[in-house]
Amino acid sequence: MIQIFRIKQKLLIILAAVYLLFGCVAFVNAHGGGSVLDAAGNSRTFTGVAFVTCFDDGNGPAENLVARIRDNSPPVDGLLVNLHIFKGNKAVGISDTVSGDADYSPFVTLHGGTGVYNIIVSKTDVGERLFNLEWHCQTADNIHTGTEIGVTQFGEPQ
Image (cartoon, rainbow, N blue to C red; front, side, top):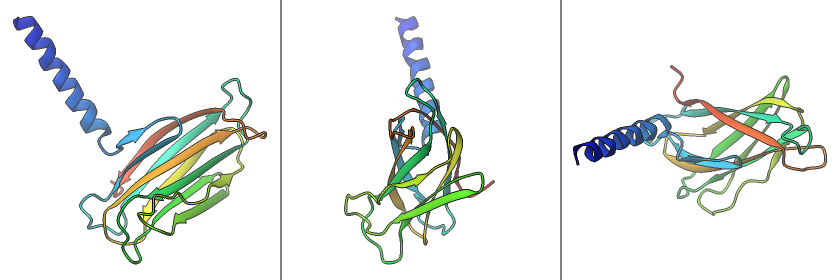
């Protein structure tokens, strides 16, 4: 009985550590994720930075990264979420211009081949923003290929 209690206790500690470690990103998978930008709602410069690695997973080499963003928050005048993708000396960006309408922005595409793309998610003013992001690495024939993501910053730079 004591051994079962210790196993449950260790499991709870592990789950709490995982929650704290990944708490800034509500959910993430190979195609999408979301979170809250600036849950305290007091920063104009709260920024999320991630990298997406596009590679050949057997479907062919990556030719581009496509992505779009959705603001799930109630509308606030002048408060929008933005998405920027860059690789090397190329960049694209887009905003979800209608907050809380359940529609994504149009997709933006950056043609950068295989390798690491950088993504920045930001907002235009003070206030909390709940967002979703969708991304896909694609071949020249628009076939989904290898995609991995990692978050490098979520908040103010340290």
